Length: 248
Image 1 (cartoon, rainbow, N blue to C red):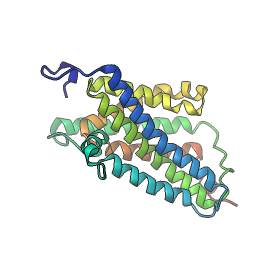
Image 2: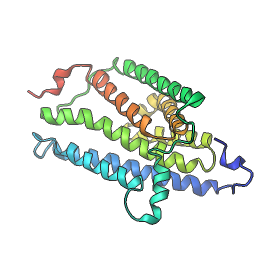
Image 3: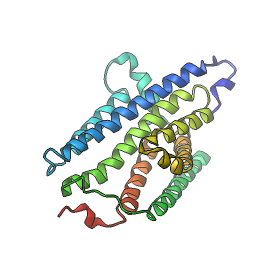
Image 4: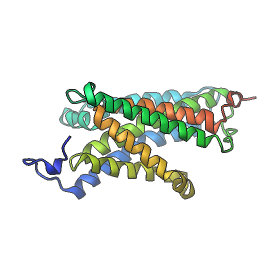
């Protein structure tokens, strides 16, 4: 893919406006998708915790978000814009064959390797305290839905809308800016945490970005993101101890 700015007959976009719009769209999607789950699971831990209703409600909400952001519902005037920017599935001809397929598989392999290193490093730390989640149903729903929300929402927000819009300036520029914002978005866990994980998160985001660019879809990134977060949650945060998931 050729940088938009280098294409002879393509108008050079206003970089400042393009970046502002891309960041606004991506961060808005990330906030709405992530914090709806956070708010619901905290409420579920206090209200009817024997039923994982927060996971069910969040699953429905994710489906609604996915359908709307992919242009599957009104208004029709923005349907194509939404379909293009989500990049759920719009590979270019030959994207899944030949040398490009080799590149895609190489990026998948790199992502699996990086995830393995991340999990192994996380296993050195103490297990997390999950006493705030009083029932077995809640604990299993957190273990599964947390990675689902992260995989679906963050890929829609960052490698979908944000990166797609920034690619008007250039693909490399888009991936680097998106990766910087993806890394900074994890500052909610604290500044010390951000400093510790920033290099790894930035590198992972770059791989996800090129995977979306080469494959023409955020679906591979969603699957890898979910699997990686699930592995980290179970083997690192819980220390691989399934007994912690069962409330006494």
